[in-house]
Amino acid sequence: MEVTRVEQRAYIKIAVLRRRNAMECHSELVEALRNNVLPCRRVAQGVEKFQEGRMSTSDEQRSGRSVTVWTDLARAVIEQLMDG
Image (cartoon, rainbow, N blue to C red; front, side, top):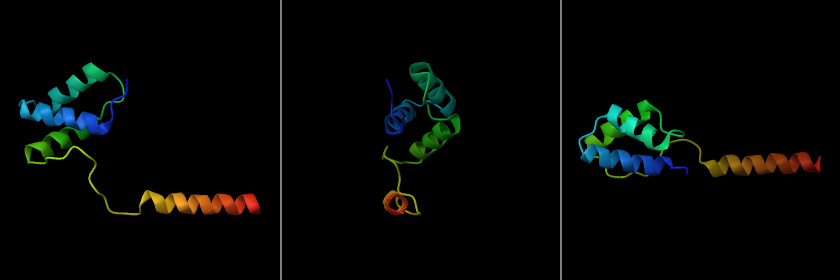
């Protein structure tokens, strides 16, 4: 069974409420999931953010180009290659 990053963050949030540190959180995730676990550094960053008061477990907005720009560009390039 695959567990998403958002679901892993939800676990980290609960673990922080239970006073678990980053190493304990990561070890528990590895024990439960074995594969596809967030890297230890990401878990530590998540623990730190939840300890600082972050509430959301969803992905944060990041700057840069949106995925749709690249998708539209890729589609246009593919269509041009197919026509030529």
